[in-house]
Amino acid sequence: MKAKLCGMRSLEAAQAAVDAGADYVGFIFYPPSRRNISPGKAAAICSAIGYKARKVGVFVNEEPYRVNTIAELCNLDLVQLHGDEDANYISQIKKPVIKAIRYHAGLSYREIDKLPAELILIDAGTSEQVGGTGQPFNWREAAEVIGHIKHSVMIAGGINQENLLTAWRTFRPYGVDTASGIETDGEQDVAKIKAFMSEVKRVNEWRTLPKFPEEMVI
Image (cartoon, rainbow, N blue to C red; front, side):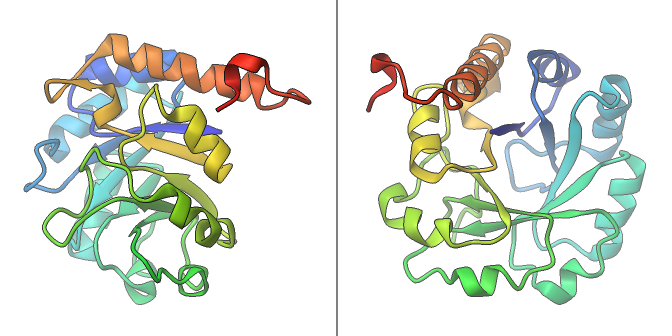
């Protein structure tokens, strides 16, 4: 199970994520978000952390030209589209795409599978807030639909150290994505970054066993 730690705003946090073994680090280029970062600052952080993790830029209904420009400036590995972007929009993006989908009742896995994306990220969200709510969606309801998606799937929305195992056992996802789960009072917390990645490693070690140890039963 891969781990994406998102909302990076400082070199200290990004370096801590990389050193702890994060597979992806995310930078949010969406001014209404409290986790927004300027392209220049993100580029400096991306340059400093090198190639130990895949670097992801998050955009919401942005002009494709600006997405491609920032992706080039920051040497991003992937672009995450978190708005209403469709297949035609995705085709204009030069980097591989993670397409975020807000879970809702009636979500169609068939429509999702038509999207030309490298990964699908299923997140919580509302009409007022496209993501980053720190709240999980209805996992039990969503599990069957998500299980039919042919793309590799990441799960987001309130993922943290405490519910990580439950998320894996519910979805068996390709990966998980967290931002609020590594924050304290809205600021990234290096101790929480380390603790979250320790739990990711523990789940990855234990999930390969023929049978879960008793303390892993939920």
